[in-house]
Image (cartoon, rainbow, N blue to C red; front, top):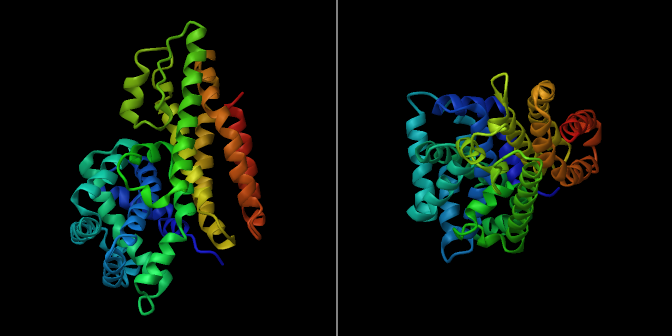
Length: 347
C-alpha cells in the first residue's frame, strides 16, 4: 500500500486535536485548521530539500530518532507546563534542519496565508515539527531508519506534498526555494494558484461591469482575513458579512480545508479518518447556504463567480477519492451532500 505522509500526519491531527492546539495557542480554530493544512505539506517540502543536501538525510535520521514516542505523549504536553517546552524543542528542530532564514520563510508564509501573526505561526510550526518527525519515525521504524531510507521516503512523497499544498500558499513559498525539491510537482501547484487568481480577478471584473465597485483582488480567495477586508474596500460586498458570519472567509476556508482533506485520502483507513473533517466542512457550508437569501444579487454574483470555476477541479478530486477501493462506501453520502451544497453557492 502506498504511503502518504501528509495523510498520516493529518489523521493524527483530528478536529479535536486541532481544537486543542488552537486553544493552547489562543488562536481561532478555523484559522488554525487553515494554517495546519498549509504548514504540514510546506514543512514536508522543506524537509525533502534537506534530505537532498549533503549530510542532510543523516541529520533527519538523528532528529527522527530523538522524537520516538512523541505522538503518544503529544496531547498531554498541550498544557501550561509542557507546551512551552514542546514549542521550543520543535523550533530548535526546524532551526537545526532548515536554518534560521529558511525556518522564517514557512512561518511567514503560514502567517500571511491563515491570518496569523509571525509569532503565532512560528509557535504553531514548533508544535507541528515533532508530529511530523514522529510520524516519519513511526512509518519507517527507527531501528531500520537510515539516510537512504529517509531520502527514498521523502522523494516518493513529492506528488502527495504538491497535491496537498493550497494554491495560494504555494505562491507564497514560490520564491523561498523551499519547493525546489518538488520539481515539476511544485510548478504544477503554483500554476494552479495562478489559474485560481485569474478566475477571481474575472469575477471581480464582472461585478464591476454591472456598476458595483467590488474590489476583489487577484489574491482575494487565499488572502488572510484582514487582507480580504482591506482589499475589498467599502463596497456593497465588503466582507460578505451576514448575521455576524463573514461568508467570504467561511467559504474560502472551507474549500481550502476540503481540498487538503481530500488530497490526504488514499485508502479506506484514511477515508475513515477524514470523515469528521468532511462533516465539519459540510457544517460550515450549511451555515453559508442558510444565509444566502440575505445576500444582495451582486453579492451572490461575486460568490458564485469565485466558487463556480473551482467546482471542476473539486469534482475531479471527489471522483478520484470515490474511485479508491473501499472509500465510496464510507464517503459517498457525505461527498454527495457536499456537492449539492456547493452547487447552491454557484447559482
